[in-house]
Image (cartoon, rainbow, N blue to C red; front, side, top):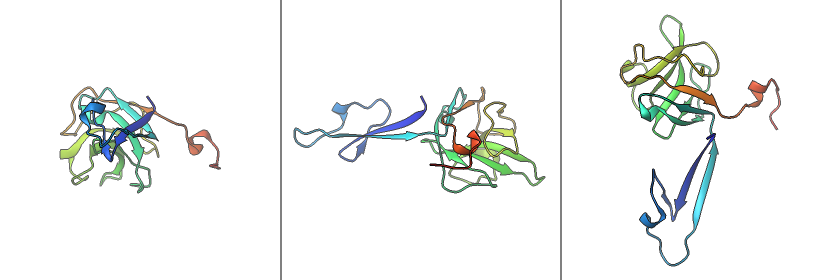
Length: 150
C-alpha cells in the first residue's frame, strides 16, 4: 500500500468504488489509463477518516521543511508557534493555517520530517481520536545518508 493510483477513461476519473459500467464510453474501443504515484507517507488509523491516505510532497516547503498533502486536501506540515516551538500538523489545506479550527492532529517536533507516532488531538478542534500513525513509503537519498540523487 505504498503507492497511490488513479484510473481514468476518456478524461473522467474513477472515484471510490466506481465501475467501468458507470463511465460512459463512445464507441467500442475502451482505453483505460492508469496513473501511479509513489507516495511519501501513508497515514492510517485516524478517527477523522479524511486524514487517512497517501501523502505526496508539495512543491513549496513551510518553516524550512517539506509539506505533504493527501487527495482529501489535508496538509501535513511543520508550523512554528509564536513561542518558537515547532509542531507538525494535519490541517485542512484550504483556510488559514494559523487557526486551530482546521487542525486535526499535531505533535511537537523540530525534525525535518514528520514523526511516525506520537500524534494527538490536543488543541486541534477538527480531530477525532484515535490519532493516526504514519508509515514512510520510500526512503529517499537524504534519509539513506547519501548526498547524490541519481
